Amino acid sequence: MIDPDAFAALLCDWCLEVAQAQQVLVRSTTLAEPLLGAMHRAIIARGAWPIMRIERPAEAEEFYELASDLHLDSFPAVDLAEVEQVDSHLRIDAPANLRALGWVDPERTARAMRARAPVREARFGKRWCVTMWPTAAHAQEAGVGEREYAAFLNRALFLDQSDAPGAWRELSRRQQLLVERLMDSREIRIEAEGTDLTLRVDGRRWINSDGRRNMPSGEVFTGPLEDSANGTIRFTVPSNRNGATVDEAELAFTNGEVSVAHARRGNEQLQAALAIDSGARFLGEIGIGTNAGIDRPTGSTLLDEKIAGTVHLALGRSYPETGGTNSSALHWDLICDLRAGGRLSADGEALDLEPFTGA
Image (tube, rainbow, N blue to C red; front, side, top):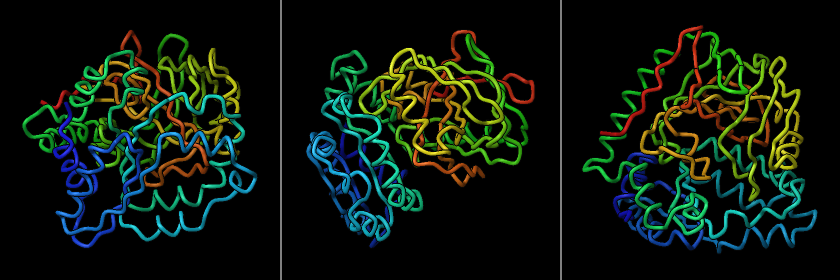
């Protein structure tokens, strides 16, 4: 259903802008073989070097089953050296089992996240993109068949259209209008059932996320002032956190910091995430979804945070290009659906969250 060669061309030319003699690092599992092969060919065709890092789907589970303190609290130096040497990197999410790490003690995953912070920061300093290839696990999580899921993802990528790059250019143009509307805003307010949260964004830069870093994309985002969030928010879209579902998470903020937190399901994961480091209890991002091709939650944060009519907040690390300064090993997006009577306003004026279909 998804043409891997067309997908690879979109990733090379729109997302990564692969150029002559560049070194492009590509990571995924063996389940993404059609796209991996297409990427290998496409990178070579553009005169660049493909550096393919392909793992078996079970490797992450094996790691946490067997890892010693050495493995959890450090990392191989070659990982950092490789990231520092490449020009860009692509991660393709292609799992065999989205629940594979559900049994792992959250503290073990938190330790590994903290230890690998230098590698993560080096990646953010390069051109990067995260995407996905449809697998049976994705379809099962979304509650649909594999063919239906592949067709859904094809639409979300705009690969069902005759000119996919042109559709992404048009999305970028329309999102830029929202960026310009928000650029002078001072206060954002989110209102819905169980939610009334305000935060400040004055002096911060809004980013037009048009598929360059996430594919598919469809959001605008910024980093709120670190001490500005006050009120409560209930996240109504479930989140998959290291193989465990976190559902109906409710957070209260006081002067930017999480003061009360509870989840109806997955509360242990929520508490462990907040304890990763001091920055994990503060916000690093507020984003507004715009992609109408993603019309329902599927269990993938990469997709769900782009649903038109939703807003998401990220606990932890800020993106420096927004002006945000919060530092953390955590960056976890949690999603609040506003389509059933919610309201998002900037300086008291409701924002029009009309979706964009790519047409």
